[in-house]
Length: 430
Ligand SMILES: Cc1cc2nc3c(=O)[nH]c(=O)nc-3n(C[C@H](O)[C@H](O)[C@H](O)COP(=O)(O)OP(=O)(O)OC[C@H]3O[C@@H](n4cnc5c(N)ncnc54)[C@H](O)[C@@H]3O)c2cc1C
Image 1 (cartoon, protein in one colour):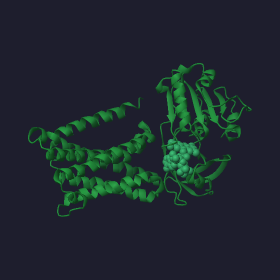
Image 2 (cartoon, rainbow, N blue to C red):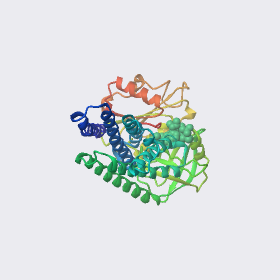
Image 3 (tube, rainbow, N blue to C red):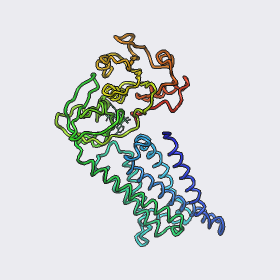
Image 4 (cartoon, rainbow, N blue to C red):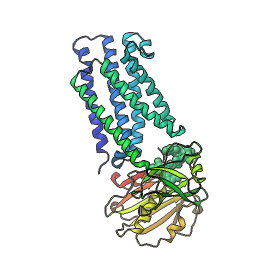
């Protein structure tokens, strides 16, 4: 499936909508009164309608992210939301700003005027939007509970803005605008219901710490025992939350064991506060697991699988290899595993013990000259890839590792003539 087509269609639709909206809003200005004031007022109106449209898309895409994850991937949805919220902010601010400029009355738009109740709700919506934006940018630092309240605020923001638009908007009687508002309202109801249904269904799923196993001096595997089996695909990740030390924000980690297992393994490198707190969990403590998510999974085809892993980026590949060991149908796998030193290579002893014809491994060490297995010195490059992979065209490449390594690998593969659709990447840094 080409994952680029739906976003492309989405932007075409959005542009068409915006063009029609512009025409509807600017009709009086074009045909009746070409004055500066009406021009500024029309820009303000257009900004208001577009900001409401964009805001609704943001809320709906957030509520349905878990559903659309299987089509686009959670990382793409989160990145889209971040960028789209900035565009939305521009229109939200432009809406009152152009009205102020056209009327010369500033306070009416900055201080809620309850004499004109729908106008007051518009001003309050502006402030709610600012609060939501500030909290979103502080997301990793605020508690999950506060984050949940913020989410309720976004619904309030939607309904306040809708009421404001219907009561005060001069174009809301237009059939085109009426239809858009109705579609957005239906979208919000469906999205909100889906989110609530998911949350209720997922509430019963509980995971407890079974064991913490140290893999290297700074990497450990957190083994969780769920109260019922979680169905996932090798390569997918979950969001973890610890109700400990106020570390409420959810952090994503890939499941490193095979989907056939009963437990859930997360192999985690110590990076900061959250990973440190996770390494100190005690047996029996609860960990809140939300998932599985992600589309960094194997596609069904006969191609050879070439894995390019860097450091802790080995986790999705470990799940795939462990899964293949349990499956009958097997693809050839070639693993290029980059790390600094042999002693820092996660799962090295387990990988060395796998003596299957379908698995070949080359270690690439940036700070070591030799090792006990087949290895290369330095960083991965096209010469190394070409040396071990003779049939580049019948292979599909999966990359997971630090950002610089991912960028380098993509560049080298492209220079070897690998088609974009045969390069699949996972990002550990959003
Ligand atoms: C899809 C995905 C899968 C991942 N799988 C693994 C894995 O299997 N093993 C592993 O060790 N790491 C994995 N990571 C990275 C891991 O999520 C971060 O290293 C971890 O959240 C860092 O938290 P910290 O507080 O310890 O470190 P910090 O010092 O707070 O953060 C270090 C970096 O981690 C990222 N990060 C921090 N908090 C979040 C958050 N809430 N959401 C998203 N990114 C965040 C940021 O880029 C930040 O710069 C994965 C990340 C993603 C996106």
